[in-house]
Image 1 (spheres, rainbow, N blue to C red):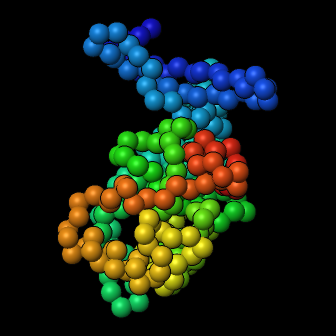
Image 2: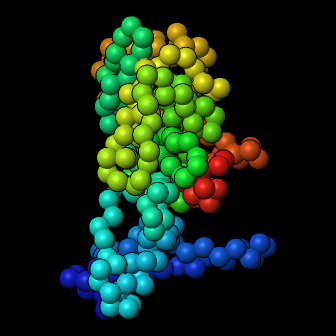
Length: 237
């Protein structure tokens, strides 16, 4: 029963009439001043959600586990995971300099057998399946979110907090030595231009990353990638 002392979650089924594909999203039910209650933002229902629901219905409370707030999707093993970090200040490293700059919200995806992928998103709120993805404005970044790690080695990923932290360090802290196969930001066409761009953000003490400089991340069909696309593709754009 809905109430101020009860946490309620709704499940919505979505069926594509053309392909027959069925997807499930979970939504928190939140109080609304005039409407009583309303559905909150949805996210794709994943294997962890299924395990939790099964545990609740079967009375097996051992199936319950805390899911980190920043995790967007994961399977039961935790080896396949998508998560995000909110906009923040970070140190970026070049061969001969370091700059403290604002970074946008970053989305990370790690799937077994696939390299780490990193994308950017606009805004500060938790991404939803419809959230559009953008090229992460990082050094050594490639079109589909992969990157050359430079001086940072990527460790084995097992879904733990320390594994997520290691991936975030791999993406942000690696020394930017060259551009990948895509500009990291609009109007940045060379390594020298990228360093100058970051130096300007540092020297101007910018508080937020300029969203108008982000470039859209596109799938192989040319359409802009969304978070749902990333999850459905299992990390393969």
